[in-house]
Length: 254
Image (cartoon, rainbow, N blue to C red; front, top):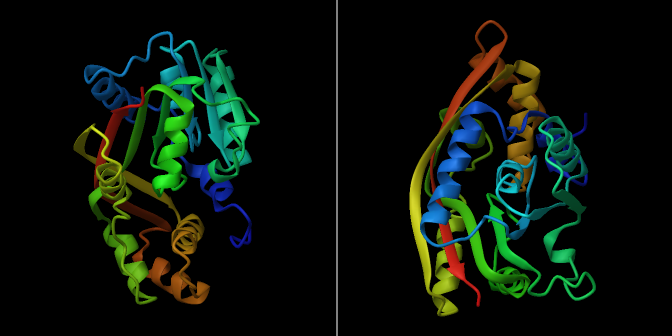
């Protein structure tokens, strides 16, 4: 498959974690608990999940909430979410296929329509305009989860160096904190550690690295990547682990 398509998230959806995978679900619940312990009311709430992906937060939240809308610009991600909802008999979830910056909240009557607006590990929220739009939709709370300072992975680091680039944290969690400071918002923020492992075939690893480079607009050379991945493989398999710090931020909107 040619990775230079309109939506690389459709490609990433093929190997993206699913919400009720044991390790993923345990981490998700721990993060939701941080929000609840700091005042965010999930029970019986109406929630909007921006950049919901396969439903990692959408579906666990749905088990507690009254209803939830999962918004994403990747059709393939939303299809996997809907499959998971059906598999786990979760019926209070609806999906909306659109990029956040293309959403017209006036036309959709989304102003102050959600008790909680949630956004996790998504590039959809990146500036003060996106934050203010979240707040316009929220009756009570906004929750954002993003990257903090650390993101390390030896495999990606070596692959990025091939093209004079650096694999590092986007630090969008830190950037959103600074935006909230500039907006004079009172918020709670907590950093936490996360790690995850990846395993796949040589071809899957080549595709995955190409996607990661494309995400930050690095013009890569497939032949160089193929040579690099083959050298790193063992018995036709690639394994690597990412170590990262993430940040959860929550603030009242009423």
